[in-house]
Length: 576
Image (cartoon, rainbow, N blue to C red; front, side):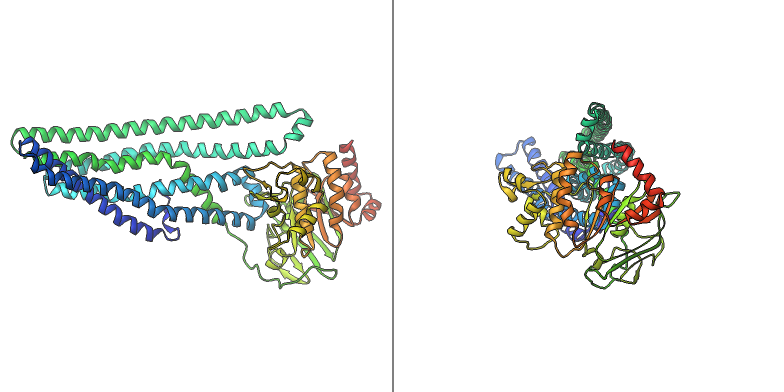
C-alpha cells in the first residue's frame, strides 16, 4: 500500500513530523480516556458516592474531546499539503506530457492521459489524505498502549504482542490478492478510457460507415469486463475486511476471557483488568482503520504510481545547443541520414532520412498508413530524438535533436486532435500568446472561420469549452487550432500531422479554405494521405515503411513515374 516514493515528495518529512507529534498526543489521550473511564466505572461498582466519579468523568470527557479534536487538527494540517502536492503533481504531469510530446500520448493513449490528469490526481489526493495519518497512527498508537499495559500486567502484553504480527501477516496476504485485483481493475479502467475516447472521436465516421452499432457493442463488452473486475476486487475487499474484524474481535475476546478467569481467582484487581479490556479494542483500532482504507486507496496508489512513472520519464538533454533565432527566408533545416527506433522495436521506424529545407516552403509528407509520416513530424518537432546525434542541423549548427528551446519557439504543432483546455474559447485560442488582446483573438477566430459559430455561443469568446464544459466538434477544434496559428505571427514554422484525417469530406473542404491562407509566409510541414492537398505543396517527401523513397516538387516526381505516381494512383482509387 505504501509507495516508497511517497516519502520523497517535497515537504513530506516536515508534515509527517508535525502529524507524528499530533498522533503521539492523541495516543496519550486514548490511554487517559481509557484509564479514567475505568476509574469511574470501578468507583460506581464499589458503590462509592457520585462525587467520586466527577473528577475521573471530567478527565475522561476532556481526553475524549481532545482525541477527536486532534483528528480534526490532523486533517486540517494535512489538507493544505495534500492539496498543494496534488495540484503541483497535476501541473508537473501536464508540463511533462507537453515536453514529451505526442509520442508519449500515442504510447499511453489519450483516454489514459486524460483520466490520469483528472480523476487520477483526485484519487492521489484521497490516497494521501488517508494513508499518511493512518500509517502514523498504526506506527505509534498500538505501541504506546502496549507500553502502558506492560506496567499494569505483562501476561496480556505477551499475547497482544504475538497476535499483532499474525494479523499483519494475514492482512498482507489478503492485501496482495486485493492489490493484484486492483491492478487489473485499474488497467481495465485505462483500457476503457482509451477505448471510449477513441470511439467517441470517430463516432461520426463510424456512423457514416454503418459501424456505430458494432462499436457500441464493443464499448459494452469493455465496460462489462471492467464491471466484472470491479466486483471481483470488491469481493476480495469485503472478505478481507470481514476476516480482519473477526480476528481482532476474537483476540479481544481471548483477552477478556483470561482477564475474567484471573479476576475470579483474585490474581488481578478490577481496575487494571477493566483498563486493559477498554484498551484492547483501541490497540487493534489503528490496524483495522488502516486495513479498511487500504481497499479505499488502492486506485489512488495505482494512480500515483502511473503519474510518477510519467514524471520520471527521461527527457532530452542539451536543449540549448541552438542559439536563439527567427525563422526567415535564409534559415535552413537539414536532416542527414537520420534514423529513429522506438523502444523495444525490432526495426527502425525511420531509416536514413535525408533532406534539406530552406526558407518559406510548403512541404507535403505523404505515404500510406504506417509509413512513418507522424514519426517524421514528431522528429522535426523535437518530440523524438534521432538514434545518433548530429543527424539534424538548423542554420548549419549540428544538433543532438530538435528539442531545442530556440526551435520550439519558432513552430506551432497542429495534430489530428488538438487538445482543448477547460477554459474559455479566448484562452484556448491565445494558448501560445501571452497578453493577447480581445480584438486580436477575435480577428484570429474570424480568419479561422469561427465567427458564425461564436455568434451562436451564449458568452461568445468567453464561453467555457473543453473537459466538463461545452462540447466542440472535430472541425471546430481544428479551427481553434488554426486560430492559434493566425494569432501567433512570430512562429513561422507550422507542423500539421494529418489535421483533417478524421473529418468528413465536406468539413475538410470547408476547413481547407481557411487553412490555406495561413500557409503564406510560413514554412509548413503537412503530413497527409489526402490527394487534394498535394497540389498545394511546393515540395513533397514520399514515405514508405519508414524510408524516404522520393522527394522533389510535385512536377518533378510526376515525371519520374515512381513511388509518388503509384501512391497518387492508390489515393485516387481510395477517394473514388
